[in-house]
Image 1 (cartoon, rainbow, N blue to C red):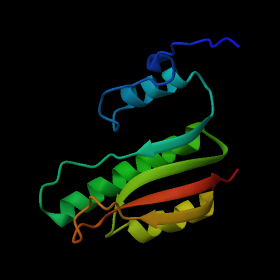
Image 2 (tube, rainbow, N blue to C red):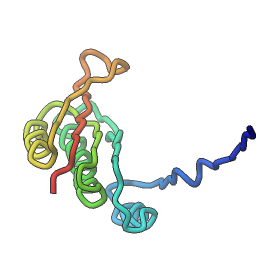
Image 3 (cartoon, rainbow, N blue to C red):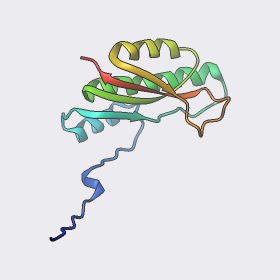
Image 4 (tube, rainbow, N blue to C red):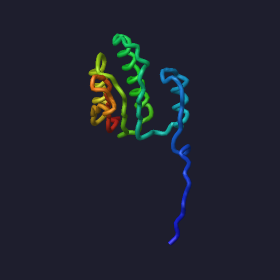
Length: 130
């Protein structure tokens, strides 16, 4: 029996794009990289720079989560999954309700690395509905 060894470059599997996700140019670059392909999973670990003022930080965090949800709507295949960082607070319940309408199952997970007092959680939305 013979064994063949293949070398696979990770650059053929993964592409990166650096920029501010709130800017249309960055969204355009991400869509360009995907070449109109539907994908299986969108993971978003995006968080705003924290100012310490909840009235400022929470809306910023929710806006970024909503952008990730909108991006997932554009690129996920039917049945695809979304993992998105969210912060509990104003807007959280509405986002969770929205995800439950768009996906078959939505689970909330708090990372072990997150401080107990932190409102940071991840929404795992499984099975994108069409």
